Amino acid sequence: MDGTAYRPPGGYLFRDQAGDNWWIIFQELPHTASQRSSVHGDVLGCSESHDELVHVRVLASNVTRADADAAFRQKTPSSYEEVAAVAARIPRAAT
Image (tube, rainbow, N blue to C red; front, side, top):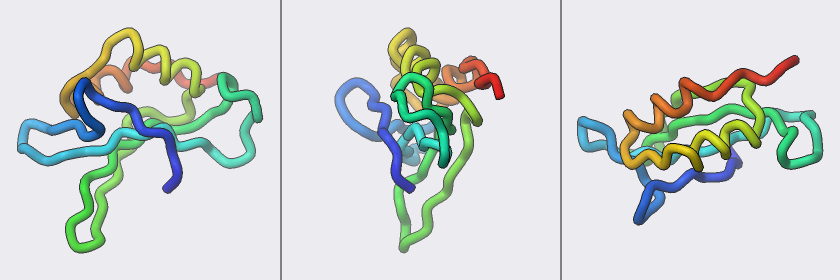
């Protein structure tokens, strides 16, 4: 996985209600536009690794980088649940 991380205030990890920590990243889809704002990808939640096991959840699929970045700028989430709510509102990219 190679993506760009979104950050909560004061760190890099978002904590969920169970107390687990999650990285939230934008993962580019292969073969998308080269202009940063037009790039399509997915917003993923990735758990902290435990004995090399990482859980990955797709929170928003086939969205543009510009829309994802704008959503996280408008409402800066501080928990995993808030991240999921923000990601659910990102519009899917036109195909």
